[in-house]
Length: 98
Image: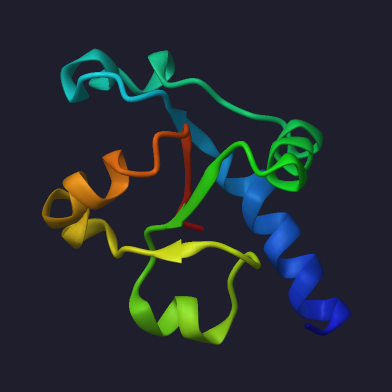
C-alpha cells in the first residue's frame, strides 16, 4: 500500500473516531455520546494485537479504493443482514465510515 493511502487511512481512523461495540444491545448506544471511542494509538495497539475486528461500513467501491488492512467490508445498509456473522467473531468490533 502506498504511503499516501496509508496516510489517508490513518486520517480516516482519526476522523471517524473509531467506534467499538462490545456486543451491547443496539438500544444502549442510541445516544451517540455513549458509544465508546478509541484514540488512533489505542486502535493501532488493538489492531496489532488482533483483539478487534475492523468493520468498514462505507460503500463497496470506497472499500475497493482503499481500506485499513484486515478490515471487513459490510456497507452500513447491510449490517443488519450480517449480525450473525459479526457476532461469530466473538471480539469487539471497531467500525469506521469516513
